[in-house]
Length: 477
Image 1 (tube, rainbow, N blue to C red):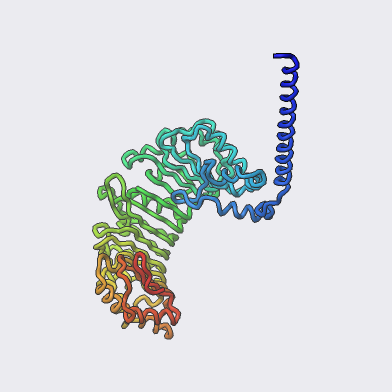
Image 2 (image 1 turned 90 degrees about the vertical axis):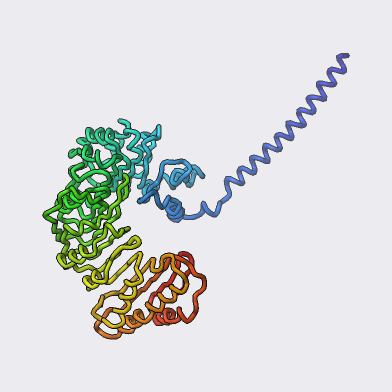
């Protein structure tokens, strides 16, 4: 090819390059202008005052992890998620210490120590609620334990979940350097069966806790640790023997609220019952684990509680419930009982005598009510003002298990006259005014006849807070 032709190709190519470069320059200028306009734009959400944005952030936090409220260390969950949206939100999130007050730290995270430390630094002076989980499978690393020690003084609520024996011993060796001067609530869940619970003994752990008021233990006896028992006002013990429960009542004379889930273990001697003068609220749970099931209400044989105001017996089966023991307990304690809750399994033998022994009751909530029991209650309401004269709130659930619509009509016919009589008696001085009534059955039966519901709707109109319902359908409210 001739030189002149080559020079023309070069000239044409350079001209084309210059043209395209000018197009690229125009596109770059257009992009830059758009960026400048975008950067200067005021997004409505970013014009909110920081305190309003902070309030939104609080509503983004997880509301429940198990039995408590915790924040988990995951970038796809708040509060960490809030730090990845924009610079403004990141600054607000990091500077709001209360967002970082709660933390759940799985021990199986490879970088737990760094995350742990960064999180606690962001919490600043806020009350810190800390949950360490998966301790049954991974022993805390020295770095995690060091961070734990460094920030121990600011922790108010501590939950140790699924601790195995090695992890417990390792924590015990580091206990001398711990300073939980702010700790108010402590929960420890041991990963073990009851036959091995006796080895979880480390009396050096969690001593010297000047502000501790609430303690929860699962899977071990009270001898596992030596907290300041005399300071405790609330205790929860799960998978305990009856003897352990009684021991807690002896060790902690200032308890006001207590929850037990314990096995019967008839071979354990619980003679020489316990009198506790300060306990006001007692809850019995049904212990179910390791192929054993039992109701903690069996403890009623061995305790006297003259200050008791609230008694809850939950998930109690027939074989585990002794109505005579309840009556004897009430007679022995003569407590000012104001609230009684019992969740009965089918066939449980709660008798009317028990309620007649609780004349100070203000609030009753009974699950799994037998038909004859309901009949007796409302017959007494109709004719005997000395029966539960201070009652203000009554709830009955499971009144018609696996029943039929005719049985529901029969139930309503039984309830209406007695309920109306007690409501009308409010004008006298012999009984308190009934404020709320709830009755629920286990099956929905479609629409019920208006004449069956009319007495209850009239009470609702007159001011009684009343609710009749099935699992999905509400008939009166």
